[in-house]
Image (cartoon, helix red, strand yellow):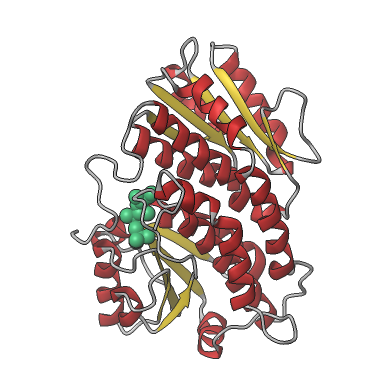
Length: 357
Ligand code: M6R
C-alpha cells in the first residue's frame, strides 16, 4: 500500500535507509560479523572468475558489484547484459561462478543465461528480492536483498539493496581468502543509511533542481568517472524511463571523443564527483561543457566539495558512494516526471518485470 504517499516510487525511495538497516541486521551474526551461507562462501572461494549477469537497473548494480569484488576480494569479475551474453558468450575461465542479479527473479533474458549455465554444469548464485522466484529456484544459491515489495516500474530500493548485499559478499569472500580488511561493510552501511536519510529529508531542494534544470529540457547528460560513471548510467535510466527526457550517462573523459558535440546553450549536465581520486578530472570535464553553454549541476561529497557544487553529500566510505549519490538522482527523476505530468509509477511502454526475451 502507498499509505500517504502519492506514488509508490516516492515511498520506495524513502524506504531505502530502512532497507539498508534491515540488510545489516539480516547479514550480521551474534559476534557482529558477517553471516553468510557456508556454501556461498565456498563457491566464492573456489571461483577463479565471476560473471555477473543482469538487465537494466540490476545491470547497473552489477557494474558497481564488479568494482567491489575485484577491489575488495581480488577475484577477476565481469558484468554482462543478460540479453547480450545469451547469444554472444565470451570465453569462460576454468572455474567460473555466475552471479545473477534480479529484483524480480523473473527476467527472461537472465533466465535464458541461467539455463545455459546449468547445461554447462557451472555454479550459480542469484541475488534477488524474491526468494521463491524462478531465478532463485533454478540457481544453486540465493542471497536475499530484503528490500520488501517493489511496485513502481522504476527500480529504486532494489538497486541500493543489491549493491549493499554485493558489498557484504565481496568483503566476506575477501576475509575467507585471508585478505586483510580495514573495511567493515556492516558499520559502513550504517553510515550510508544515515546519509540517505539526509537526502530523503531534502526533497524541496531536489524538487527545485528538477524544476530549474528539467522542466523544459529535451535532453540531459550525466557525467562521472569510475564508480560515479556507473551511477550516471542509473541516474539517466531513471530519468528517461519516467520523464521521457532523453538522458545519457557518459564517462567524463569520453565526452570530448564525440558526445560533447551535443552540448548546446542551456543543456543540463549533471556531474557526479564523489570519488576523490578523479573529482578534479570530472570538474575539468564540467568546465569543458560549461564553456559550450551547458547548465551544470555538480554533486560532490564532503571533504573535497567546492563552493559552486549544487549538492554535497555527507561523507561515506569511497566504495559505498553509489548507494547515496543515486538518491538525489532518483528524486530529481521523480520530480521531473511529476512536473511534466507523466505517470510516475507506470511509465508508457514498460512492464515491471520483463518476462519475454
Ligand atoms: O527484475 P529485474 O531486476 O531482473 O529487472 C531488470 C530490469 O527490467 C529493471 O531493472 C528495469 O530496467 C527497471 N525498469 C529500471 O528501473
